[in-house]
Length: 426
Image 1 (cartoon, rainbow, N blue to C red):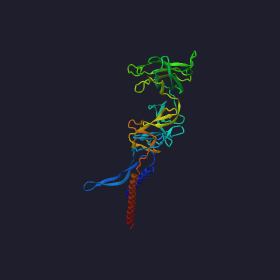
Image 2: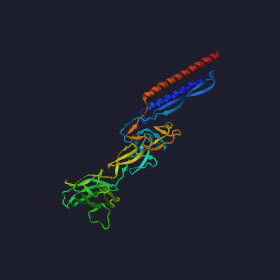
Image 3: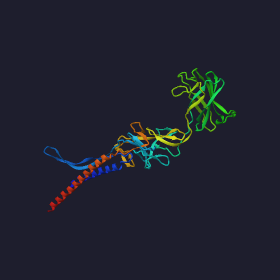
Image 4: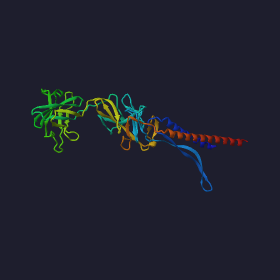
């Protein structure tokens, strides 16, 4: 009675389907989970003869599991408000280094930071990406765990340029001075240095200026300076009858030329500074004018910053992790890498929301989010499960009915066998 194998194969197939369905339903709230579906194929026994029409007399041998496929359709991400959480919008996977060192790939972005300040998955796997040095991401470097917390400090950056809106009173007498402009800059160690710009009217519509720093802030010289201030830049400012700056101006563009300020080595050990005083705004207009108003300085803007401690971070669409520091500056801490494979169905599930590459999937192609067909990254959100509960219940009913039908077939075959044995023994 070899035909018992036919309904038994049906029972096994139905059991496989029910197992996949139950796994899907149990993971309906699992971040990044991808719905699985079992497909089947028939087992062929033989076709050793044919009928009068020469049609083959074929005998089926049951059913077997052909494949288990995953539905990698992206579902809408859910905002969590947690900066370390990430979701992928499109094709690709996060790259995770498991505690044993093996590499896995995941869609689940419910990341946190460990006590070492590294970005990690719930099972302790380390999120891999490109490192950053002094705020510059090196996408040519070997992937490494991303460090985004615990004692990180933002490097000090020396000021290289500044601008300010300056008004000089046209009623100032020749030989008289206008109130000076106090400008704050940072040296290469993050120490505040103070510039003072002094203005003296030398003729109608003409002013001289000097930029000074306290001599005490400079490295000692031989012989020592006896002056309390040191001039680091000087020149003249000329205006037309409408109070518009006419010198210094670039003759090629007609726009105000910047003033170069050179500060020698400083007493705190910081490097010498070269600073550009921009006299033009973003549209090319002058930031300094001569009007019949009281002299004054406003809207000072400069680059550079002191060293600071990490206060928080955010993740950009290209995976760059931008750290916010106590100084108010923003510096890149690293960049999350994204991997793709040629055949996602060839990936092997290994648990903990992780996949491994196989010969069927092909090797992972690693790169920057948003390039080469890779997904973009959504910070502060996670991708949910794409299990459709209603669909799973429909599949469950079908699988249950198939199981019951095959079980009934086994019972029927058993009854036939018992009847046959009874006839043979009488």
